[in-house]
Image (cartoon, rainbow, N blue to C red; front, side, top):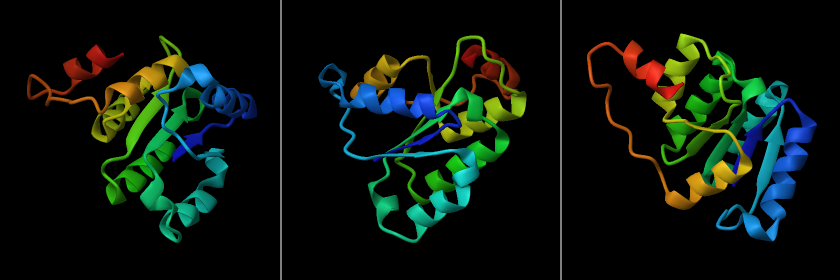
Amino acid sequence: MLICIADSEYFNIALKAYINEPNSKPLDIKEILCYPFSGQSEMFYTFFATDAGARLSTILIDYSSVSIEVLQVALSLKSFNPLIRIFIFAKSGYPLSELERSLAIVLGAEFITSFAGLSAALARGPRLTSPPPTSSISPYLTAIT
C-alpha cells in the first residue's frame, strides 16, 4: 500500500494514472490512499486503529506538502513499521530548511523528481545509507541537495 501526502488533487490524479499504466510496472502497489496534510487525524486512525498499517509499504510526499509536521507524521508511521520506504517528490533546486533536510535523513527518505524515478527506486529495493563522513552533519546535508 502506498499513501500519498499531497495538497494537489492534480498530483494525486497523475500518480494514480501513472501507477495504473501498464508500462509503469514493476510498481507492486495494489492500493493507494491520498491525503492532504489536513487529513492527518483520519490518516492516523486508518493506520493505527485498523489493519491498514500492516499493509503500508510506501509513503510519497509531494514537495508542496513538505514541512516539519508532515515529516513528523511520516516518522511516527515509520516508528511502528521501520520497513516503510519514504519518498519526497521534489523539484530540482527546491529549497528545504536544514531541519527538514535533517529529518529527511533520519527518515531515510529518498528524493525523486518524477514518477519514473519512483518506479525505478521501488524496483531497485531499499537504498543503503551510511553515516555522515564527519562528526558534523552539515557537509552531508549539502551533498543531498
